[in-house]
Length: 120
Image 1 (cartoon, rainbow, N blue to C red):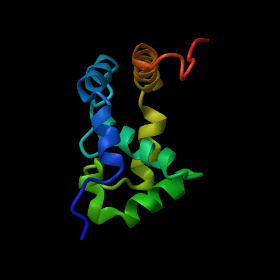
Image 2 (cartoon, rainbow, N blue to C red; image 1 turned 180 degrees about the vertical axis):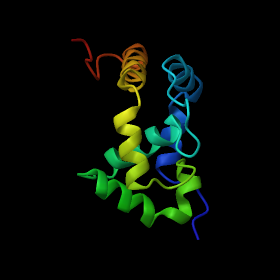
Image 3 (cartoon, one colour; image 1 turned 135 degrees about the vertical axis):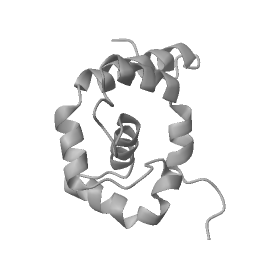
């Protein structure tokens, strides 16, 4: 039995959830949503990127394979293909765009002595 944190959980702890939820509320991202809020969508998509999934179906199958660990991974509940595809199609892309710009801006401010050059 695993006693520590999963790899995705500390990564999601690094992401400022309050800022993301503020941006999500700005664009009404969670309006009329019951089961799959923007934060869960972000967590599932980050999981898909970090686990090198190639398609939406692949991401959904991987989250369903880890259904017993979904809460501890940060998903809350595993994503179904219909939930994830509807969320990707109906949610405003500006939520994730603005948040990505904020994360890149924070990375630029926190970089250590020209190890990463993120200008341009």
